[in-house]
Image (cartoon, rainbow over all chains, first blue to last red; front, top):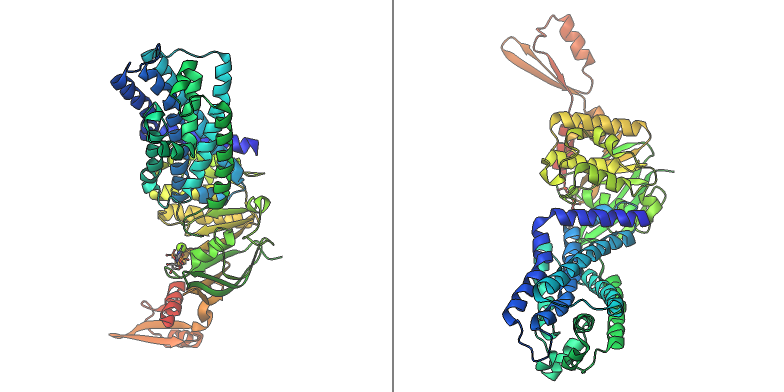
Length: 261
Length: 278
Ligand SMILES: Nc1ncnc2c1ncn2[C@@H]1O[C@H](COP(=O)(O)OP(=O)(O)OP(=O)(O)O)[C@@H](O)[C@H]1O
Ligand SMILES: [Mg+2]
């Protein structure tokens, strides 16, 4: 089963890389946004030693993972259902788990590359300092949990995407809304009305962004967070809970084909 | 044990019956063809047998198991060529065939099946760039790469050129010769005649005739039509057995340069069967 999962992963990555437009749009878009936001808002922060562009560079990691995980997975599954990939595979002894692990490998590969690109832009263009080892440790579990949550939710949401061609439109609605209310595009998040912060706190993106800011920004920046603290424990808890919710949703909504219910 | 045993199979879509109670037995090693007009229920039936669709009623045994619940080991024993697929467009022929081969316990090699379907010249091409018939041959390659005991082919030769079709027929005969059971649907009656040991005609979700290509729909008993020239006149006679008439014509010294003896083709029989239903 392991070899089949790896083979699926290989084929997924291969197919993704060969589809140039999707490479450019899903992959380079977050980095372009970062360049844009970072350049427009530049140094406009009161906090000493931190620029707005550095805040964007760290928060944007949440966006990068969300698009690679949620959008790639959601749209990819809808596409696989439509073009017959899933049906083909279902007629073979390939276990469903191997198919899903293959997708996870794709998402993980893309997310690692995406994160590396965003960090690179942050460091090279916006002088973002790299953190110490203990912060990288936090980065590791935060990154892992974020990828799993986004991937699971992507699988779950693909169940309600009827046609692959509408996938992008449907999936980007929650993505864009969450960016605005979760402190990715607009930070300090405390500028938002309290109720909106409460709403954002129910979803994983706010916690992902907060966590990445902890990793890359100086400790003093915690005063700009909703709770005035980094809340690492709570981040882990919320993301862990979303893993469970995502898994349950996946199992409830997964369909092999559009036609036969 | 038979390869396929179906009794009283029913399938409804939104309350409308697409398969209305069919019985079917396909023996091991047999080539069985399912014919029928568009919308007759062929794909529905075949996909239920493949485990792709759920049935609403009836008993189905495929290689001794219920396809609705059968597991991976069962899937490793069947091969499927779906009516339409356009997956894996960005992979090359070899990449895709090799990939799928990796799912089976004792697969054929990629090169071997690519050769069998006549795609060797195209094996490093992306599937996206293949012509319709070439793309279809990839589907066939993927269907047989796992060395199936039972092969389902839903209109496998759509888009094949005449030569490719002959090649495909040879391939199917070879597979059958090795003991593979084959269930195929087709709209080409010459294909059914050339390949099938037995066949059934499906119309409106029901089997309207079943038999061998020679006997289907009373074809063997339908007799022959004899026609010949007598002076300026064309004479035609329809007889159960033309032997006597032919003997007499020879004895009488009739002009036999224009003599024809025709028996209903499978296509005639089929059209009569379908027409009679309307
Ligand atoms: N998923 C579906 N939902 C609703 N109706 C369906 C579905 N699939 C098939 N049908 C209907 O069931 C009937 C049988 O369809 P099926 O695809 O089995 O026919 P077929 O014999 O394979 O036809 P063809 O020769 O055109 O391939 C048709 O009337 C079709 O419209
Ligand atoms: Mg069909």
